[in-house]
Every structure is written in structure tokens, then in C-alpha cells.
Image 1 (spheres, rainbow, N blue to C red):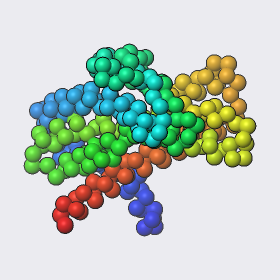
Image 2: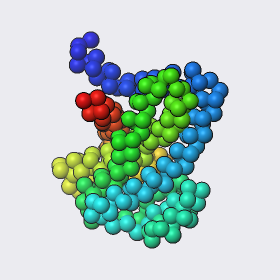
Image 3: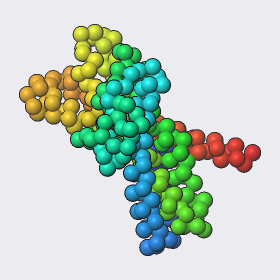
Length: 247
């Protein structure tokens, strides 16, 4: 294996290796109490992360120059409270949360910022927190708490593959395809729910074509690459912080 291939393999395996290192440093030595603390921290972190994630979509859209009219957040994630704080938040949704009313004014950069904004938490907080756990090997209970807190956002790029990351890939792929096929409707492959899109195109009388299959597959493939890039960015940020702290 060449040096470049070996390095690529290490980076591809990085999320799995980080998880294994965190588990071995916290849950294995901490035994039962560590598992309990990690579970409690995971529940709390998830309950906080879901509304933060959805709000970040809306705030990212506004910051990039778009407009937001409706963000649905389920009541169990604080939708009723957040509706009092933000005029465009509505309590209740078929999803945990979903930005259903927004206008990018046809600007794909605004659209990308809207979709990608929540993953700043992954890059700046969650992945660095996850990678710090092996350093707490002599304090496994602290490591267990950090593991529970980090998991929802650290793994969000991968849990969001059929959602936000498919959508990011579809924005880019559809825009590129229109360079040689301007008649393609930009919205045809764009969706924040891949399963819903596939069902609509191919299993609900949608008359999906081979072009649709290729475009959707390419969008998903690009989404996978972007999810890995997001995680790697978090790892690089963590290393930069450590270098700065030790300088």
C-alpha cells in the first residue's frame, strides 16, 4: 500500500477509531457507572441538540441573506417554548424538527449555508470533545459523560446522510447537471428526505427515469464524501487547538 493510500485509509477509518478509543478509555474501565453516566448524558445531549440543530438551519439561512417563515419543532424538544422566542417557530411536526418555510432567493450558496450551518457544532465542539476522551483514561467517569455529550453531534454527519447531507449533495449535483442540461428542474433531485424522494420518484407513480436514478445516486455519494469531510474538519480543528495549547 502506498503512503497516500495508507493515509487515506486512516482518515476513512478515523470516526470508527475515535469511537473505539473513546469507548475503551471510558466505558470499559468505568464499567456499570460509566455506562449509566454515558446514557444519561446522551439523553440530555440529544434533547438539547435537536432544537439547536433546527435553529441553526434557520439562523444560517438568515445570516446568509435568506428569509425564514416557518420552522417546525416538536413540543417534546421545546417547540412551544421556542415559539415564544422566535416568531417563525411553530410547535408540532411530523419530524423532530424541520425547516419548512424558507426562501434562499434562488441562491445556492444561501441554500448550502442553510443546510450546513448546524454541523459547525460537529466541527467546533463535538469531534474535539470526542477525541479528547482518551486523554481522560484515568478518569473514566468524566470520559463517559463527555462521550454521551459528544455522540449526537459528532455522529450527526452520518446519521444525516439521507437528510441534510443528501440535500447538500443534491444542491451541488443538480446545479452542475444544469450546466449541460438547462431544462432540468433544479428541485427535481433536491430534498431533505432521501427515502421520501425515492418513494415519490419511483414507487408512487412518479415515473422516475434512469437520469433520476443516476442523479440521486450521485447526490448521495457526494453527501457521503461531505459527511466525512465534516468529521475530518472537526478532527483537524481538534489537533490545531491542541497544538496551540501546547505551544
